[in-house]
Image (cartoon, rainbow, N blue to C red; front, side, top):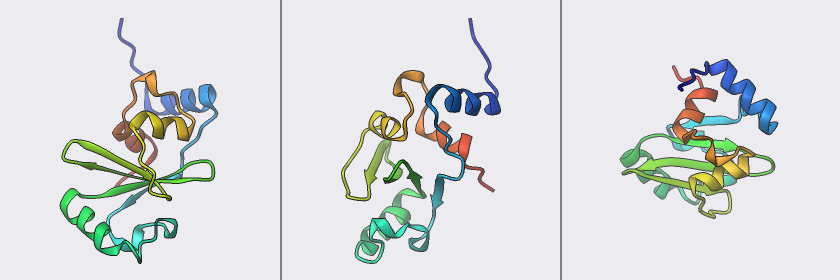
Length: 117
């Protein structure tokens, strides 16, 4: 049996089940100026420029007391916190307070909470 869950119902489910609302906590990064200061954009400028030029936009996630950067690079999910500790997709979801096994991808999470023009 297949169920269809609308965007608003999925947000309500995540908020009710996990107590998490990521509204306003995901930011698209397309230039060095968009990178939150906790990621040291001045000292890492060359690396960030390379990543943005070669792999497209990054996304900043704000968790409880931590920030995370995400970028899809050649089919690999690159995820790190502000201390440059690397995370798996499940690790990021857990840090955000969302159960990993519910079948939601990072891209779906971004699309759900970040309205792009």
